[in-house]
Image 1 (cartoon, one colour):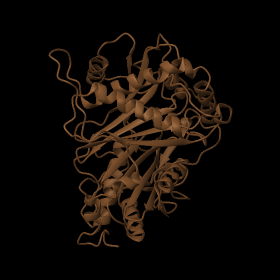
Image 2 (tube, rainbow, N blue to C red):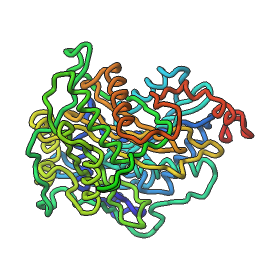
Image 3 (tube, one colour):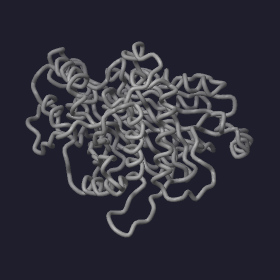
Amino acid sequence: MTIRTLVPLVAGRESRPATSPFSIIDELNCYFDSAAEPNNVQLEAWLPGHLSPDRLRAATAAVLAGVPAARARRAAGPWWRAGYCWEVPPQADFDAVSVTAWRTDTELEAARARFLAVAPDLDRSPPFRLLLAQGPQWDSVILNAHHAAFDGRSCQLLLRLIADQYGGRQPREVPGRDDSSVSLTSSAPPAGSGPSPRPRALPVRRAARIASAHKDARAARDAPGYAFSLLEWPDVPAAPESGSGPRVTVNDLLIAALIQAIARWNTPRRQPPAPVRISMPIDTRPPGQAVQLGNLSRLCTVTVDPHHVADPAAAVAGQTRAAKAAPGPLASPVLMMLARTRLPARLKRGLIRLGLHTVGTIGCDSSLLSNLGNVTDPPAFGVLTPMRMWFSPSAHMPLGLSVGAITVGGRLQLCFRYRTALLDAAAGQEFTAEYAAALSSLSAPPSLSAPPSLSAPSALSTPSAQSALSGPAGGEAGR
């Protein structure tokens, strides 16, 4: 979903905003959303001080007033409609900012899980929520955005716009400044628009599934929601130099480590050897249009059999280079075909969710990794620049686990989001440690002596954080 310009009211007996149909990607992301599996994107910033809730609320309201794309909602329609439409109301329906307090690591983890347990309601504007979690010495700002309306890049832009407003700076990037025309566009065709011109071949072999691990397997079978595990790397890992083959990027290395971690995790749990398939989003924004809001990415799949490949990073690099160089399908051909039918949207949603939890175990990928790359200009709330940032997409079953990567201040931060129906908290931590071991084994010797660590809020009570707290502004961005 992309909304480039302001949407004027349409003249008539009852003035209503103009509408634009959901793209197929928007539509599918609505179908993937459920109470047990909220389809949302998390972007979180840890700030070395405290924000003013009132100023943050005012900054968010200013962005909503000036950037129509940020306040889009799903237009009302009859139950038998074959697809949905976007509309932009003159103003947001309600306040998107909430505030909570935490004192311990456990309380912040609980606040995060509770806040991200529900995706924003698309029927009410805006399609995102913002939580200010205030701790004893520093705050966490958590963005919860519906994946039908935002991808990771859009979340970055949105949080930066809010931070600019908070700090009283002129926004550096403002999408949709035109006040006269209406244009709601997307990188994908609308649902119900006909057959796909570029079908993707269905997988020949069943992909490996991440083995479930629970102390109480029976109770976990229907456990709703997600849990999170955070891993901080001491620097940015790099692949060892090789004389031939494609250059291995950081993203290739992260995917190869996930493939290896899944294989290592499954082996002692008696899972049969199988190729590992990792979903990787690719940004489809045209050059020069990086400030568009919406879900403007397509998924490609990287497949490696770690039991028969000596250099998984090189194997990944060859596939990702080819995927980025050529256009490809936006999603699974079966899902896209179903989304294009003229069946009622409610029926299509039910069929897709039924398929995901039955035959989906055959056709779905093993996991998903999304990397936002190196953030050279993180969102600064006045004098407060993030110490850490965390990002994660959703991972509905049968995937059950996704990895979000982001680099800030020369350090890689990884967020593992996993379904509680797949792993319990102890298993989630164990899988994260398995991944850390796999990434270490694939990387060149680190430039820093510190080892990677599972990140906890209490670990930020360091001299550098303390000095930021006692800065000229008294540790606050103008409260």
